[in-house]
Image 1 (cartoon, rainbow, N blue to C red):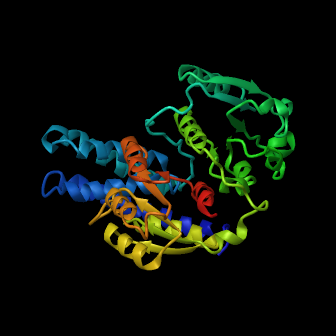
Image 2 (cartoon, rainbow, N blue to C red; image 1 turned 30 degrees about the vertical axis):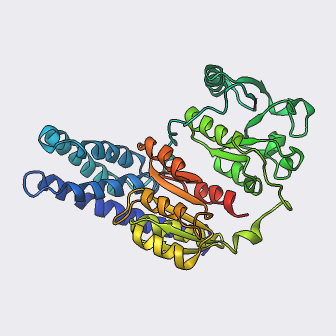
Image 3 (cartoon, rainbow, N blue to C red; image 1 turned 180 degrees about the horizontal axis):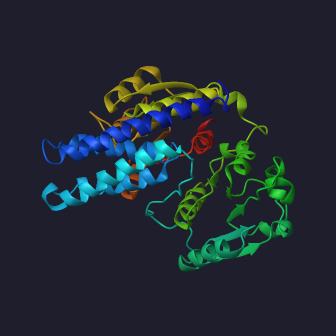
Length: 374
């Protein structure tokens, strides 16, 4: 199945998600007065958070985050707010069924950082203008880090003036013919200096071959300053970037086995289809226990773990994987709800190699996994 064919899969999943969500929100609303099960409500809200923005309903995901927060408080104190929340959810699901889904990108939020590798570093900001440039410069000044901005045409990839900077942050243009950095072969002339690319998904995808180097990363629009700074710190943390062999890595991707552990069938359906469309062999696990067993028996090249899973959560699975000699070398990517910033920091401390924020974009998922297909 080609990437284009996924539209039908997404359409079916969107429809099922909306119909199911409409019924679930009404049932939860009725259950508030009799037989309310908090754990079941938390599982449903978690499903709404993960699938809402992923399937093109960011407003559903936003409200589900609020409901998750309320469910962690005593019911007697928040009953009326929960009632209003479930009522709003029912209206959102019903409204989307009537009007049809219109996918809308959701900004990615970043966690608090463990340390500040950007302090006293020098950063070249290439192609940024207006408010983006002003906000980024202000954030770097506050760290503090030295920064200087360049128009794309004045700082091509091979220009010697960029040699003195510790990090290059490049804003890719919508059209590659307007920016030297946007051309597929441009980064061959940029050397192996730390690099962070920022831009629309199609512009980032043209440069996907470079993401096999650990000191190169990307952000797709929309993005936040905090997310950009976090990615910049991760890029600078790489002391000895591995050299790339050749300009593409397509043959390597076809040999990679990926274990995806998530108890949400909607997420696993789309993730599995997306990975298989890119030539990866994918195995799905429905809970933490199954993920551990599969990691031991199947020896995947990469593991994607949802943080919230039954039996064993993602943190417990990650901890056990890193404690075993035969699995500690496997790169692990965490899936986490975007409001749980502390989870991301905890995941890094336990040995996670990357994180992906729910709701996430399938193109972003594949591009981030390319960093591990070496």
